[in-house]
Structure formats: C-alpha cells, structure tokens
Length: 177
Image (cartoon, rainbow, N blue to C red; front, top):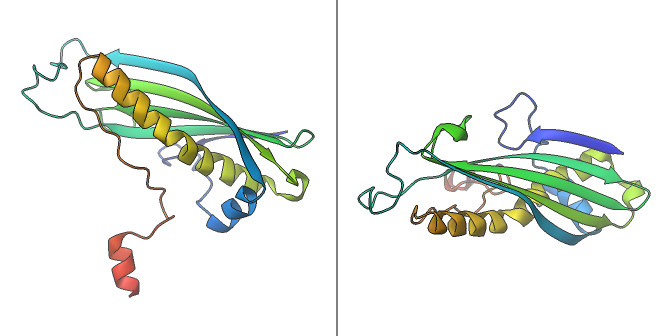
C-alpha cells in the first residue's frame, strides 16, 4: 500500500505530483473508472454579508476553488483510489472559509488498473491526483450550482477545469509559433 496527501494547487508545503502527460497516459490505457461517490458536503455562509442575489444588487459571487487529494494503491486487487477535497468560496486562498460563503465537497474515485504491478507509484499517484480531479470536476460544478441556487446565492459558476501545464496558454502557444 502507498498513500500520499497532496495539495493540488501547490499552496501547501507538499506540491502535487507535476502534471506528466506521458505517465498519466500510460496508466489511463490500463485504468477503468469503477465509480465516483460524493462522500462529504459542507456549506457555510457569513450572516453579516448580503448573500441572496437580490440583496447583492445583481453582483455575481466569484468563486475561488482549491483542491487537495489523497490516493491509495492496493496492488493485490489492482485497485487505485483517490479522494479529492474541493473548497469553493469567495475569499482569496489559502483560507476560503473566511469569505461570504464556503462550499466543501469531497469525492472518492476508484479505478481498476490492469497490470498495476508494472506501474510505478509515481505514475499511479500522478494519474490518481490529476485524473481524479478531472473526473470529479463536473460533479463539483453541478453540486456547487445546485447548493448555491437552493441557498438563494444566485449563480455561482465554476469554470471549466484547466490543469496547469497540460495545455499551453494562448501566450505560450504564440511564443512557440
């Protein structure tokens, strides 16, 4: 068994495994997603802030999203699990709990990996953290919008996921061309 706890956005002392497309692709050819579960959900609002959309005069709440992840390997059964914890709030990082609102969501993704014995912990960890975040991000977007709407916060839109270093930015692409 191997386990790692990492901060995906790199704001804590232990950075995430760097995005490595070659490692991730090597594992993804052998991995099958077995399931995703929402294992925790938390909402907190600041009673002193005008949170309902009509009280804010139409001002949109701009969310800040951070994530942490834990992964675990069971080589005997060929299972790879990851738990991704998302924090969505209006406060700047690193303390999303102090803003107008905070939504915390924790997802567990489980993969079966054929030939797991031939893959390094580095490759499996990189895959677990980055692919786990990629697979759970749409669920985070949906649950955030659903909870915000039910709480009367109005639209709280989470952007599409952009994994750092996975796709060159427009400026990087222009400088290469």
